[in-house]
Length: 316
Image (tube, rainbow, N blue to C red):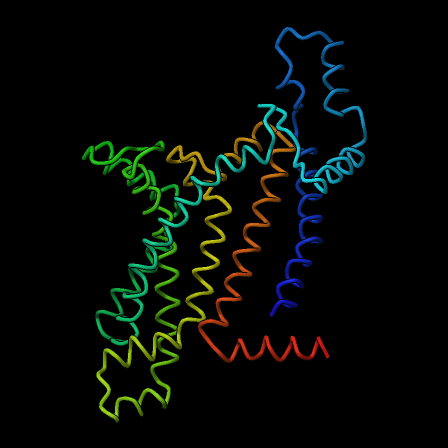
């Protein structure tokens, strides 16, 4: 298993190089001039040229990219053109807020979707199944920005129960978490239902029922446990996506997370900030997906045995 982990971590290197190269060049090719945003309105031509030289814009882009990657190898993700703050510090300041939103959204999703998926699978073809699938389809169909605005109008403007945006209290996280969690809930409900339907038809569950095992125990202990692999996959993917930054939701609710930081940096053409944040986002997502793969071995001993066999072959 250790060899597998090391292999996955080494695979990050070409991914980071490729993504950083793409982001760096695309942002540089975007219309507009970053120097005009940094310089004061009454700056002279000489002062603008000095700024170009200071920030390295008098060098070819490939040279600037090579210098940036050299700094990254030494743990330096660069400094923001706009704020002058180190990129890593800016990212780490926003990361806790994104973590709060991500885990709150996943909590909403898991608490609602897994019971609904189980009920839908157990009562396949009944009105309970049909209602659950219609609700799941609606959840998948609603864009986050539309749902977010709808929740703000209802709970903030009309009823005055919750704040419309910002950060600081538990009340501020409720609407953003529901907005992100709704789409996640719909997807996870459908996955849970599909996975449970595959399992509940298995012979070993019929054997358990014939031995007099209570139906609730058959479903929750035996069926759900064996249906967890696809469910864990979806939860891990959703968590990785949320940790990358829910850009639309963070913008709608003025939530100070990583997604909003990236969007603001793109709008201001802050190349080091955009590149550094996306590199950190890539690393975060890759580590989450690696943890999901390792969690498979905990849930299913057969997968752990496969890791052991692969490790033994590699060692041999």
